[in-house]
Image 1 (tube, one colour):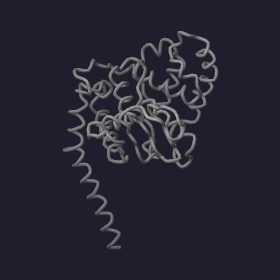
Image 2 (cartoon, helix red, strand yellow; image 1 turned 90 degrees about the vertical axis):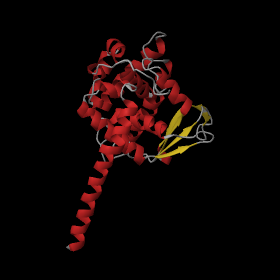
Image 3 (cartoon, helix red, strand yellow; image 1 turned 90 degrees about the horizontal axis):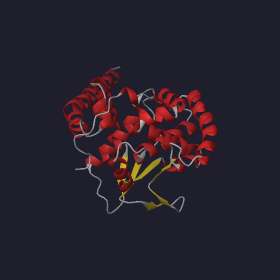
Image 4 (cartoon, one colour; image 1 turned 120 degrees about the horizontal axis):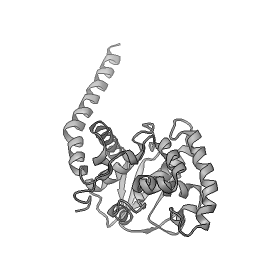
Length: 258
């Protein structure tokens, strides 16, 4: 009985320590770094800012970040990656993305050991790993309205694969994912035939790429997305339980890089 009480007390003390560490260390550091530099975060009300910061902190501490030489992966770089994960799962079940254990970051585009092709990033569920090139990340974040964001793209792949592979916990709503698949199946033919389609051609490679490209555009270009693909936009808003159009995205005062 005494050991059980001590174990409970130790757990409570650890939780209190983690909360204090968040409130006086991680929370303020992440807030100063993101506010007025990361439009999505800046637009959130304060209560959701706190939730976002906790998620970013959790991913920052949870993932094993592995840089590939000659890249030196700084705390700011790891924070940027962690924030993209927080953005996607802000309203999803807390275990989303927990299947993956490590994040590998190359300095530039790289030759994949799996596909033997040149990549900006990829997801390897067998190794529970998500891979990015820092050049690809930087290119995606330099413009916030072009519908290209490597971080959101690869984390969307990771969520999709996790949803398809894992039965132990919920990742995405099954019925809404089926709606995405039905919509994608009919729209991919249109995309392939339409040179001026809102999505770039890469989206019609397969269902997974369609979803990842849709997610990039959902967060980066919500207004034109909603105007050109209103049905899909509503489906994704229900899937992610958030609507970027309801956030008044400010113009960032200074870039994340600089």
